[in-house]
Image (cartoon, rainbow, N blue to C red; front, side, top):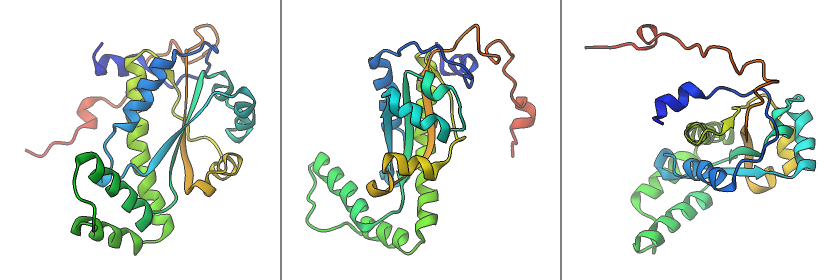
Length: 210
């Protein structure tokens, strides 16, 4: 199946049937997010995987009662760095240099420039930038799930501050951005399952300058 066909198949599943997604498929979806492009290759986000039923039950009211949270097989939470610091930027470059067999005695000019650029900005500006990078991985994960015929519900409808507190994310230097329940659609209970997918026509969506 092509990516276009997969995207035509997928939709924001409203009711999942509780069936377990094979772990190898979940691993592929997470790996797709891990391999997604990010600004300067910093990957300023983490993917948190929740399968514990009791924890999902605690998250559900934070997500305004949405049933996909508890009916999902795996609940993925995308959490971005709460700030760019010299330390976390340095750790990325140190890993890159080690993986590539390059010397890591002193920061490169590019690393110094990057750190100087970010550390002069406010924490909120930096978090918003990191959150945008998390969304890239989020989108790639949704596409990979569709290719694997795994249903997923992109979810911003939750209270981030409450979720951060429940999971202790701020102590890890993270803030929650989005959630992605993975599972399989309930053909009999999901009101959206048989409705036509509607998108802006290409003629209106595309603006060309020739």
